[in-house]
Length: 507
Image (tube, rainbow, N blue to C red; front, side, top):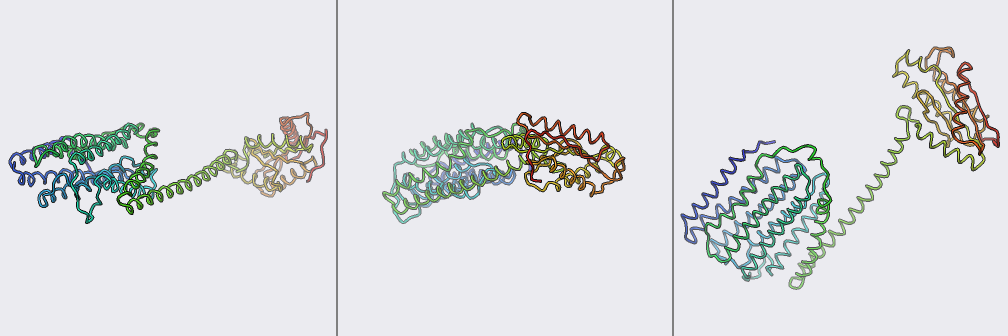
């Protein structure tokens, strides 16, 4: 980032600028000479403000460049206005009370400034909406000019003079509306880097509003230029100094604060305000300029319909993505990260569900607890990475032994797995257990022990179907059966069955 100049130097240059302007006006006191002496300063001050916006747009964070660019556009419009005003004053001798081209440029100056006030960060910005808001704001400013000055700018219609008080009231109202809007945004903005932009903007707009109020009331009763012209310099010089001044360091915690409700309200209401204002002005202008008003109404309706349709589509897409993300999170929360089988939480939920289903339908429910024989010996001998690979391979083998989609394999503990087999009797459960043992043996994972050269598993089978029992009893029964299988030499299948009203399963 380019290094900004020191604040003291900037303030000194601004003071010298105003002093030179005062001296030039005191030296050249006549009407034509004072205008020629004053306009270079009146032109240079907003030009400096415009240049500072361009500098800040290149030096500031990317997400706030567009806001500085909008302010720069406003300064550019004001600079164009003062150029036209100089041409009208010095060469055309247009009276102050006539609505001329410069008034149109001065009036439109507030459009990009208002857009900058209501702008959002790049993370929340929709580029298409930004262009629509800009189009609405420009059309609103154009129609406001037409309704106030009762003439189309840049048309062949003769420009009739209007009361100087009307001009003063119009510009003062615009300036104070912008200042109040910036104040509301500043009050709603949390502390951090974003707040600096609104501090500079709000301070400038209030200084500009007060200076313009004093100057406009003086200019309405004055025929020439005087020391009061320096009031025009002050807000632009302040803006240039404040924009280019070194930025104070902020607490990172403060920068990460969430936006307040009022900020979100302002950001979301601003586009609606543009649409409502455009509709109202279009209907007002239609009385004298039918086609212009019709275009304004059509533009407002098209923009509103496009915005509503786009937001509805985005809302539906976001809702769908949220549901998909929630489903993925739920799946992750119920899945064992290593073996990609169901975890203990999902096993408990599924067992309770299947138990109640078995009781209601008077069907048997089988539970298999599978333990890897001498798994600690494998870990100690070959290391934990080899143990993890063993668990993954065995999980796949056990899963392959469950051909029905309603069966569930879960990792029950460290080296223990559990399988829930709905509507399965003891004979069917033993068949599944034997298939599991064969699938594990086929892996031929090396682990020399009393059961042989390769990894084996012991299986405890429990089959229950009594309404007087509960789900905890089937787990205890399967665990006891597994204990007997281990005590009997491992690599065995042991079963416990409760025979109140077991039916034949489908295995």
